[in-house]
Length: 420
Ligand code: ATP
Ligand code: MG
Image (cartoon, rainbow, N blue to C red; front, side):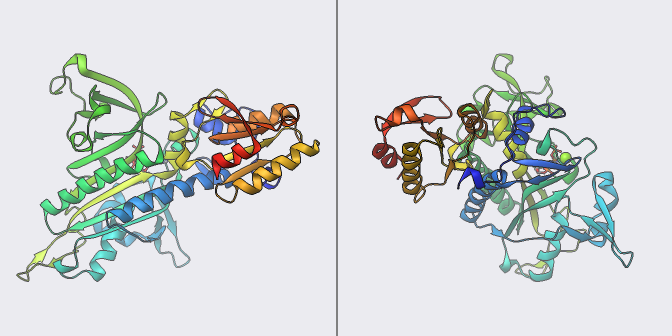
């Protein structure tokens, strides 16, 4: 990709209404643009990151046997009246009338619809377990949308739903998802710690939130000092809770081991049994021909929030520092002197060679050296190949590691070999 043709409207200006690093950097790097309060357009740089993240999520869902679907964003109110949530959801639900005066809504989550799809087709316990998921837009009319896409009104969520024949089987599914989430976040390049959560509006009795530690997080976490080194198995029972559930009288941790930090909730998993299957009459017949109501769970990842959370956890004063797995490009080539023939020739040669194997952004714009270096640090691609007129006389280019700031000099051949 040539930067001169790339739609990435970068800016030096700090937007007045943006208060936290991720919001500022997403606006400044031209990733998002606001269209109404809490509602954003996603521009090419951001979409590249979204797609990297969704690919990892899909691969990990696949691995545990969850199958991808698309539920609908617009849903009839009737489904939600059946579950009893139509009134209970309150003002966060965006309610819509169609031309025939029918009541619809823009989905804030999909337990009802997943249950409806299940009951239409699965009639016997032999058709279970079932695990379906999607990555799709949600709308919640948040009372206070803020921090950009961190708490938006329209946001992208991975939401999954499981149907099991017994509590034991549902618990096993929960464990499988729990581990799969740890693996997913690890592959994305972030540390998300699981905390035992208050099930809240979705309800139920087994629930974990996945939290990325960051000072700007909205949740306060109380956890055991040992938590960061616990094994995946240990993490399911290690003590970690949000402040709503913390009680100094009952906490099983001594004061000296207790850690308190702010966190950003990027995932939330629930087991809620027959909370939806019973009222929605979604039953199958068991081996004796008796009614069996599936034991359900739902599993969410805030994909769009995750991007902001990654930036909160990984940036410096100059800009974003993308983890390699989800970076919008693998490497960027900065041709500092577009009017120098040698620079142009070498930059083109390196670009042609490396782009066969890697995703490369070649900054071929006619702008100042300072602006070019600043934009590269702002956008945060993990590696910068810097080509300047002095060093190129001796056949030397520089490779800069965005994270460490380390710069090494290399020949043109060496740099190609490094990435191909
Ligand atoms: P929160 O407490 O932050 O409002 P929630 O408990 O309402 O989150 P869930 O219903 O569990 O959220 O949704 C799953 C995930 O979707 C959350 O873990 C979060 O990462 C993301 N999410 C929820 N609300 C928003 C929002 N308004 N903007 C962006 N992401 C969101
Ligand atoms: Mg919420």
